[in-house]
Amino acid sequence: MLKPIRRVACSPALAACQQMMQRFALWLCDPATTGALISQQGLQPPVLASAIEANWLWGFLQRVDAGQSLLSRAQTVAAMPPAQKADMAVWIQTVSALVTQFQPAPNQWPINRPVASELGWRAFKALMEAFYEKGFRSGLPYLPNGTPTAAGGVSYAEYVSAFRSEHRLSLSPHAREVCVLCGGPLGDTPHVDHWIIKSAFPLLSVCADNLQLICNTCNEAPNKGDKPVHSKGSFADWFHPYLRPGNGALQLDYVLPELSVRCAATTPADQSKAGNLDGLLNLSSRWTREFKAEYASHQDVLIRREKRRIQSGQPRHTAVEILSYVQQWQADLAASEPHYEVRQALATALQEPSRLAAWHSELNLV
Image (cartoon, rainbow, N blue to C red; front, top):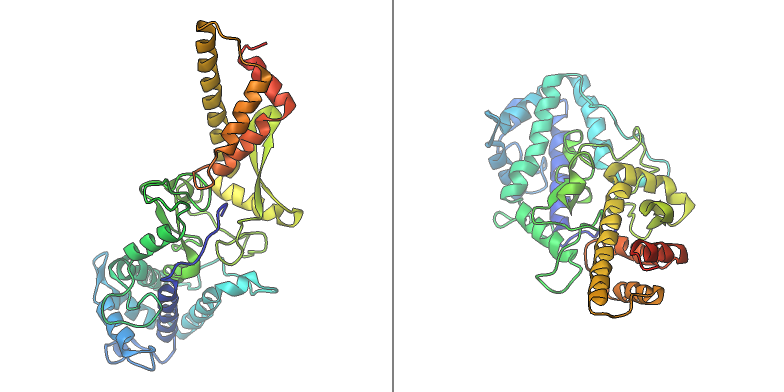
């Protein structure tokens, strides 16, 4: 979220799939829906919006997950008692209206699963997650603009490619890519992240507002992992990649005596959000490691240069020359490179008179 995060060209296809999932889930929770009604004919309009979607969904339900067909999972949900169906329907409507959580006076976000029956919840969870694990992987029934299609729909691989292309900071195809959350290297094996974890909110498994491509360091424990991105059901003190972006609201503050960096907000109103993001991703500690590593790298460069000057009988570096070195390095920093913000913070810190004098001393140049 240090970098701008934008919806990609195929996001309408994901939004259309999200609407189909919501429509199907609510239909399963209708008291009048039974397992016997779940058929290719039974899914046709008006249950789903189009015959293309109905036929795709019927084929999707024939797939097997953990030794059990997705159709049998749907039948388990349809067989839940009316009271449980009613609770589930309320949960589906609340979770589907994610955007309202970032508007004034939102409804309480559910923090507990909606169904008392373990069997019913497991079936619903497996069914909704399969839209991501199986449907998205092989291709959804939508063109990038969200129009239903019987063949050639948007797939996981296309989404990854579109996200990488949209968020590439350099025109060169060989340039390093940057993680939108931390500003570090995206890496060779980035993860498609569910901002709100799909294990707890499987209905959002293919939600365009819930997906982004980030580095594996950000996505894995002890960083984001399965941590919640709300405070006991409230999103008030949290950024969101699309609905409340952090880009432009974050800054890196350096602590000169410690040679450390802290994740901070540009305005006091966003400080709690910056703190929550820092806790989610451990940004301050990760940025500080990079800050110190980059410092050590430049210190090594100057030490080696100093040794060569001494060996050749040249005068030793002066404080002015060190300052010039730092200023030239700062001028050459590229915003398209990983850790650009950390390196800018370091370059600024090194030009503080006290830090410049300390560095001069550390190099044994006094």
